[in-house]
Image (tube, rainbow, N blue to C red):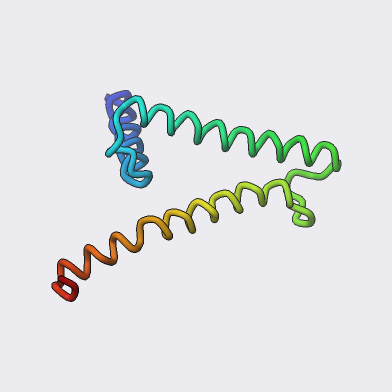
Length: 103
């Protein structure tokens, strides 16, 4: 019973991941490629951060000079801005068509 509940929870998290990233619209092989590349990017960012900290001999949670961990933040912010730039006009136009503001 506990294994079944665990599987349901993991399935629900995976479903949420597909919805949030809009991967449910892709074919299975495209989904796999995207997921692998995303995990590689996060792993390499973490590895680069660890190497940078080791070379600078920094403590992991040191608040000063966090340039290595900021690279991931910049990447996520860049992706968010790009996604907004690409998809927001389409959504706004769809809303305006729905409310018949634009024909």
